[in-house]
Length: 124
Image (cartoon, rainbow, N blue to C red):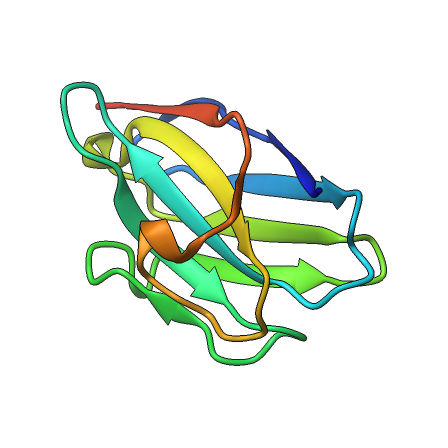
């Protein structure tokens, strides 16, 4: 059983930056692909970024491409989402997810474990 804990969310002005972290514990001796998803109020959860094991095959939603970067530090069992040039439409709860395979995926129902989420609010 893998536990995921996100951190790093907060309030930022448009154009600013935040870095989200997702720390994994339990069962981390296996290989996991990781993903970030987000859900804005009144909207469905949507894919943001994914990274395979051990760090290849990153893929991004068109809406964040060129602004967000996903990375991982396997020695710390942590995945990051660096978010630059933030826009008000990036406001959402951001979730970290893990799937028990090395292959990255943009499909939420292919993930086995989810964190509780961290709020990101971008003011205009």
